[in-house]
Image: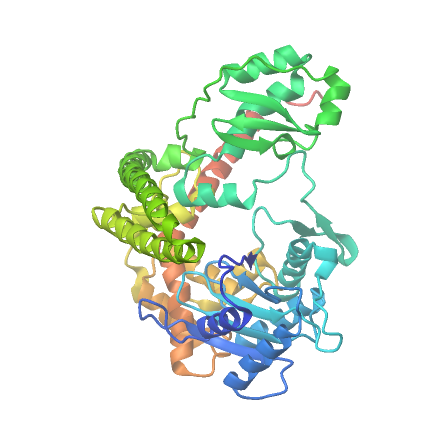
Length: 536
């Protein structure tokens, strides 16, 4: 599972407007493209019963908090591909999450959306305590860490699959081990979002890749500065701390490694010495992350070329706008000076009136100039997502980009084919036993059915056979109340197992099987040629 705290991006709207828009968004039945998205919804700890009254109730309680500009928190819990929680499991997950976050008695809205590849639930919780009217901050403000712990416990209780880089993992006796204390800190959210969107290494990634060993192994300040300059980095002191520059991007030295604080470096290298760097900062060329370089090399280079052209186009328009506004400001200064000189003979009251109307007139003219310049050409979004760019050439490439962390160099991914054995009825119970043995008895039923569909595909059954088998014989499909819900459950599982994600999974399974066979054959070969034991 994945947990994410949605940040507030608009600070100009009032609490009433923001809360109202958030509630309307999560309970909307269709998305912007007209696709149905609302699968399940619920509310907690409201006195009223209708949706409109509950919205007003949340707004009224939020207004009681004068110090907090936005006391309603927005969280998203997302399940992995193929995982489909029942409404009962969603209700339990939301209540358990709020309980561990110490918001058990707080007002909350939640809604499950199904318009994306992964089912996810939006949670709106009012952090204002209904009894004390104070904003409650879980875990003394470290709410994200507490949220990751709640997700780890939910995965263990409900049988969901955990992410590869999860913050917590189960330990003995019901405890959980934190994996967040690494030798070097994780990428900050901004850097991670940049890499996920563009496939380009962030400044923090480059600084860690190029400068980590240099700073760690340097024996003097002169050596540190010289070696950093050779790789395009620079090290500067800032107040009581230190900065590492990657082009024109400044990073805290502690974001490269936790041991790179200025006091620790001074203890190691002596009193700080300034480096002799060139005045002009050279900007590093865009570098692809490893997955983009090995699998999406040609597409990524084409994407970078288009983005570079968009940047030039945008810079040209911005310079044109800047020059037009500068000419207008020079003209207005001369005009303002002449108007003040003419009005000064009529006294200060008339002069102030003239200044006021001249200011209003200049503001209107400035808006018109901006509109004229912008109408001459507006560039596309500069940081267009690499995935959305890939989707122009087909959804398969964009889905593979989402699966890039699972892709290994040299992995051969084929499209779905079946050998024609779909005329024979599959033995569901046999598949069920194998899936439960692999995933464990505690695994959620949707995960087990997804594994069964994948095994059926490997054995040559087609999509329709897989859907009909799960629809008619799976006990987890029977938990859905309506025929439409059962069909949607089976179709979503088949879409994952027989789609591009299934292609990646099968390619990895085949690669692992080949490696297992090679290791087994080497072991047998070594046993055949091993010397026989000496008999006394």
